[in-house]
Image (cartoon, rainbow, N blue to C red; front, side, top):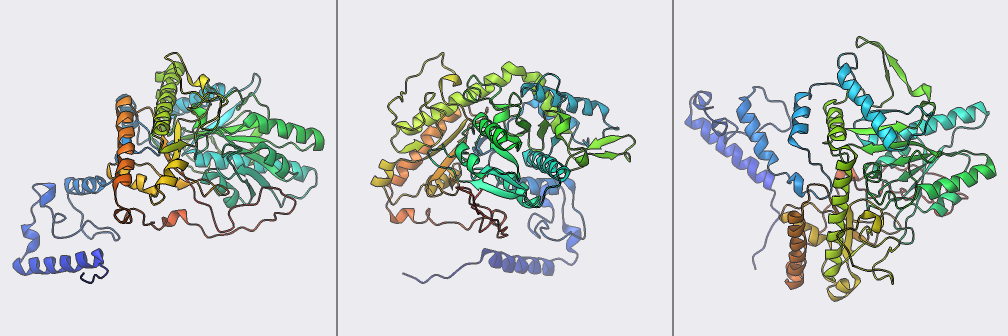
Length: 551
């Protein structure tokens, strides 16, 4: 066997390129005169030099050449429709509306009053969809996404808590907020960026890997500015029990006089629960509960709009502190601003209004029911192989939460709806079954993700939140664009990838099982020390930075 040494591809390319360009310059007295631009591939970027990557070029280049070179490089990206971790499909008329209005800036109300009318209509439609009560004056705004919306909701809770404490002459230096360890990273960012102690409560199989109301009871105090409750866990798709948490906070207020609000992170679920027959599984979750003061949602998830829009709505304008509202006069008119970003794209707001009007309630309902139906089919198919078990439970009959429960039955009928099953997002979170791991202990689950990536599917494999991080899951988000044909192909490809791993020799699998270094942007080393005294189960799993997160 011959010896091998490390190969640095960048070094090889650079040395050969320099030699190539040097040789070319010797052959041409005036090389610039011989550069043809008849087609994009006859420009200097075809073979004589790379497209600039890190420094601004001295001279420009023909538009068609630059367009083609960038387009070719982007061909290395995945196919959006096979990105089963995220993404959105939009119809051609909606895409046309976006293109026609892509230059409009949402911050310029005076210049684009018609667009602002559509924005205000979206706020009203969503407020009514989420159960705003008679006599309340809901207020809200489009944001660049759910992350900004969550920050605004949390900031309003913090400011209201501060104002109340200052009025009472009490200390305001130790605010805390409650969330579960399955919280999306934006919720943790709020706590860190706005200097609020994050009391991150562990999840467990018993709590369905979501917020445990009993731990909320044990961790709230007079310094709790609010509770983040997630309508649709990023990890497993479970809805957190908003009404149960609300009852606990009602009891706490009756006992102590401390009023603690709820912000519902409905990034995905707030566009699903209102439309499906399952609703939120019998739990109230929206403005029907007086303790729910604000709700956010992503337009670019199940709002069915391309990335670039989210929504935050407060049930009444009294819950948005005046201190957070800025009055602006320098764009030709008077406008009020209470977002973190000023300039924002307006086209996605227009596209959101298009969807709301075009689809209506029944259109959204049909899409969400279809997504859940296909997610159930995928879940049942995976478990039928014996190789996999699902952590998500939307495919199990209502009230059945584990595979193998005595009441579990795989029967189905043409007339069934999501109401016959556990409520949740159309998310399929699955892992190798215990029997599979016992029979094939050498096969690593992440190898399935790698093999499917070779077929251009993007199906992430990652551990569950802290306290359950020994369990790794594969996750598929079933969107409206996943037809039965694509679903059939996906199931076949998962089965084929699994069979290939079973058939291959252990040594052949070693290359697939090498762990990659995590991406830099997912590694945070900053530490905020907090006092864990007198708290049960709420020890913050961030002592070494933000835990592994999913978006």
